[in-house]
Image 1 (cartoon, rainbow, N blue to C red):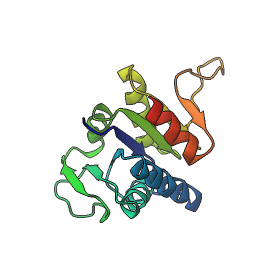
Image 2 (image 1 turned 90 degrees about the vertical axis):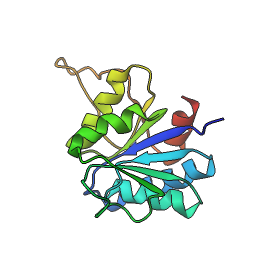
Image 3 (image 1 turned 135 degrees about the vertical axis):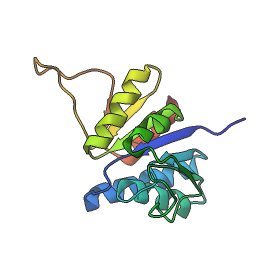
Length: 157
């Protein structure tokens, strides 16, 4: 049986709080036996990779660059796409669930791609809250306050 693959996205330039949240999410996903997918770079991506690897987890980086240079050293494997931000579509399509931590424009694109997929649980931990023109929250993204709740919801699917 294949392992569940959980994508974790967030900004390359993040706060210390977001770093801590991402590291804990990585630890919890590894402890649950999930394969962690991420963009493979700095910030949230590096923190989730470090957390997962610290617990013996498998971490696959879907890297935007033309070579593995600059990717997080905690990745188990690096998929070199040379696609820049377009690699977000590959990351989201490869996931069984998506956890976003914090917010950047790239993170927002991953959330949007996940929601457009239609069958992907999307969880936000301290990140984007999207509202319609009338101010009403756009349904679909599940907002949580802790790494434990994020992982639980992602694994429940």
